[in-house]
Length: 350
Ligand code: SF4
Image (tube, rainbow, N blue to C red; front, side):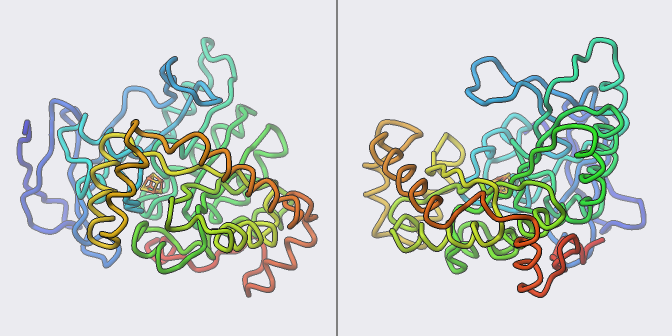
């Protein structure tokens, strides 16, 4: 590994030697640890990025061309996360390091404002939360998103956010202001609502119920919020009853739409997910190997069947047809008025 070491001396950090990579992160990068329960065992690399609005490679099959990612690595720690391999570009591993060694682009808000004002910028849609979650736990401390959303709002630049983090509710007023002047697309990611599986395979995330509470709170403020139903885990969360429970609860949360995505296993995610599967469901390992024998994707026929089932369920449960008033009622039923925080773990770290 190309690591130098850095002794922390900022008073907030443990007196521990932690690594940093000047060659990759720049001379002014700082490595920091925090001795608070939610951050124990984690290291944050505060870096000054050169640019923040990044172009998606042409080969990518995604419906947007520009992204903002203020973080690299993600404490939500989903075993299936497809972004894991990107950590290896930093000379860190795609497993534990991805969960605990987080790069923080501390100048993201200033850069976003500057780049959005540039004469070269054409005002295209900017997607966030597409690589790692911009509302992961670190955001509770670093608070980069309000500055980024504020810059997008002031430039009236269209954008979208996908998240599993309840911390997005902190920024709901800002999101409403932005939606007054531009297109704002919001989605929460809830692949399934089985709490036991969620705690095991995505241990750092708020529960599926709380994520759907986010959807209800956003919808209750009059903004549309979709549910990205991903990933559907073959043989684990794909029974008709499980699919039905997820779509029904998404409908009750006022989701504007539900879009299923079947698990795909790219390098990095593949090894880490199969390791989790071996520990928790060894009887399924061989079935998965056969299912994903052709590569990263599940068989097409299976993907099509899941899409069909979810579409039928979405129609049955009138997904996309709840009015903001109905969603507000749902939000109240969960004991959390629309637009306020469900006291997520992330907020307790603020
Ligand atoms: S929340 Fe998203 S980015 Fe974070 S670990 Fe899970 S899948 Fe990856």
